[in-house]
Length: 246
Ligand code: 13P
Image (cartoon, rainbow, N blue to C red; front, side, top):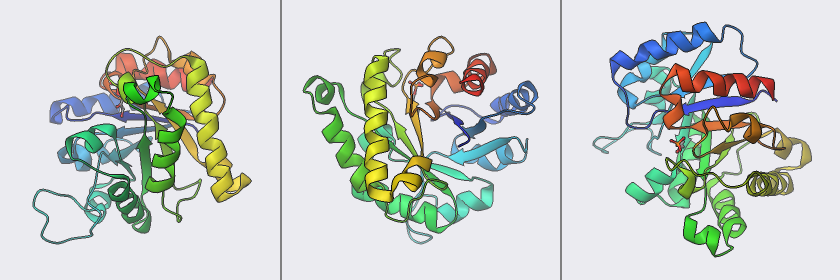
């Protein structure tokens, strides 16, 4: 399995920031891990022409292929612009746009049907963590957001505890390991041992150069979905190096 270092730029960056992609490519001429940048939608097309060694993805999509959906972008359009991955179900979309597991399932299905790769995100709130409900929440999100047509080589799962996003706080390494092992077990129960074993399970939430190596040493952590620290080469490059070394 090739590990995945994914950067989610969120709503940050304009054309001026694209030079970061060529700098990243120069810093990692033959990376062991796959490097993915998901810039804001208007930058996808330009980003995709910069380097063969940096894969480009989108942060969201509409589930329909075309039609009267003002302001939305279909998977076909994202593919045409050069995206190969699409993040779906990020907690910021679930919160800001009231996206449900059903919406995420429909988007993931559209992504797969169009030959792109979904990164399906899930994670518990602080209240759910403190209430002891983390595994129940993850079980529910995983079961209802992941389509039956998902497979290990096409679909990535991202575990992102909501309370760890942009806060500088992370779960203990034991807690991260517990959730990743649980997701792996659920995937293998549903898709079979080999197929379920082939999904990459990313950790996301305050991944930094300072904590990357210890997070990547946890079994069933197959990469990271990085927000703030993916915005500069100075922060993202050591995270990629740590993943390559894991
Ligand atoms: P931060 O790395 O900024 O905490 O964001 C994580 C995230 O939400 C990535 O999708």
